[in-house]
Each structure stands twice: as C-alpha cells, then as structure tokens.
Image (cartoon, rainbow, N blue to C red; front, side, top):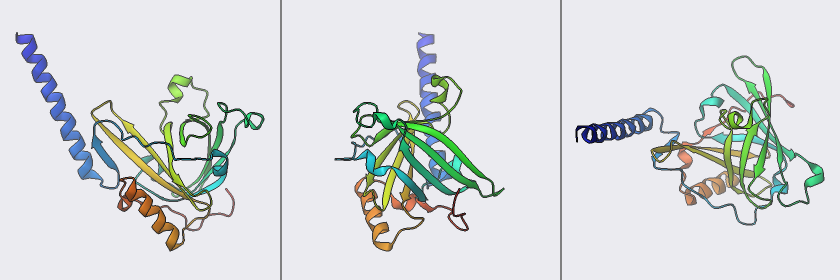
Length: 218
C-alpha cells in the first residue's frame, strides 16, 4: 500500500513539474508556440507538386528558433537527390542545401542534408543532415526531423512548419516563411497571413529574418 501511495505521489509530482515547465516556457517567449499533448496534425497540402518547389528559396520571416539566433541571409536550395529516379513514385528524395551568414563573424556556412517525402505527392518530409553518424543518431541531431509545407503558391512563397513533442506531455512548433525573393509585396504577405490564420497559426509569432547587406551569392 505504501509503495502504491509513493508511486501515486511521484506521478502527481511529475505532472505538476511538467505543467510548471510548460507554463514557464509560455512566459519566457511568446514567439514560440507551446502546448499540452502531442503536436497538432495537418494533412498534406492538396495536389502538392514536389517538383515545383525545386530551386532556391529565401527565408523572409520565421518564428523564434534558437539554432538560427545568430544566422542571417538564409537560403534554402532544393534539388533532386537522384535525378535518374524522378519517375519512380517512392524514390523522390531532395538534396537540401542550407546557406547562411553568421551575423556575429560574417562568415558564410553551408549545411547539406536530404529530405524524403512520404510519397511523391506529399508535402510532409523527413529531413536529415549529411553526417557520418549512424542513422539512429543522425535523426536526433538538432534540425533533423519531420517538416511540412503547409501551403505554397510555388511562385512567390512557401510556409514550412515543424513540430516536436515530449511524448504526450507537451509540444513546441516553428514556422518559416520562404520566398523566391528576400521580401514580399503587401498583397502576398496578406495572403500568407490569411493562410496561417486559417491553419490556426498566429502570424504575430513571426519576425523578419535578417536579410540586410546580404551578398549576391553564398
């Protein structure tokens, strides 16, 4: 009986700690979204065409994301990983190049990885950096995980979303808005914000990415 009571008290204490932690995180930074339970699920974008997102994208806005706190002039490049496999439904993988400038040192950097969509028509993909670590470890590296193109018009903007959870205790998600140019016209930005609101995501979380004095090429 005493063991049962101890376990019960321990469970109550853990739940209280988790609640307190999530509350603290909410108070620390309202730009990043936290919630109880697991990550929300969004269906793949209807009629998504992966081949139309190929090429270069500039990060224009994003929610708070600690790994990018010193980064600016961020560019994403998507190319087919295996061009000879483009016609095969289950083998459409993307080579991803993430190019940034360190705002503290001014040094450029390039991180390479690859993204594997659920299928040729899915906007949900699993991303991993190129590394010599075993696959089981590579999946745990910061930045690795599932990403989803929530909405894009292919020509002007793409809304990228990722979410991580600690089991069923709570989750945290991030939003990135990419463009074919480093900024948006007013009408395009309005369309993006309206799309976010329809998805239940608050545009107020977004901040402008650091795109001043960027070099022509990285």
